[in-house]
Amino acid sequence: MTDKPSDPTIAIIYHSNYGHTRHVALAIAKGAQKVLGETNVRAIDIHEVDWDFVDAADMIVLGSAVYMGSVTAEFKAFMDETSQRWYHRKWEGKWAAGFANSGGLSGDKLAVLQQICLFAMQHGMYWTGLPLMPTGHSDTDLNRLSGFLGLMTQSLDAPPEETPCQGDIETAIWFGEYLADTVLKH
Ligand SMILES: Cc1cc2nc3c(=O)[nH]c(=O)nc-3n(C[C@H](O)[C@H](O)[C@H](O)COP(=O)(O)O)c2cc1C
Image (tube, rainbow, N blue to C red):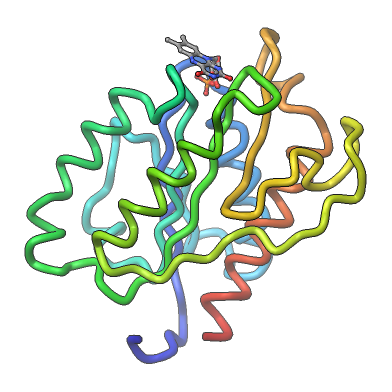
């Protein structure tokens, strides 16, 4: 593991076609920024990756909307684009975490988190999950979908300001704070 960073940074890379996964990414960023400050945490659209920031980050958080039980084609293209970084072990020793948003309650989000985790393992990163016991299963509960490998959120067919529900967004903020604490402490 690399030395404990004094001023750690987090890159949150996401793919979102309709804005719901973006909403979740911004909530994770909000939580992490509470701990690390605004400029040390960036939510980055997969089409606008700032590779310098990402390569220098202590943690990379990856999130995708679920399409056909998988990360989206755009997200997979991003994964493949990192193959030279994989070859040169550029991300080895960084922290990694993941999130998945989809329309279904399950929606096969677990498959997406597993894909993202495996990708992080290929890069030699250290995975951290979501160690948060569900408080219940209503729209205002934390971790209501009971994901532990990473963050699971569900969006309805409505504007991103309205969905995912309050509990999912609060879970995302909690996750961001937890991730920031993790890079600070380890
Ligand atoms: C081509 C396509 C495939 C989809 N496949 C799934 C799926 O496998 N499981 C699921 O729950 N939702 C599925 N959905 C719904 C999306 O997951 C949902 O609309 C998405 O998470 C919205 O995120 P976004 O607003 O960030 O794009 C699919 C949507 C599309 C357009």
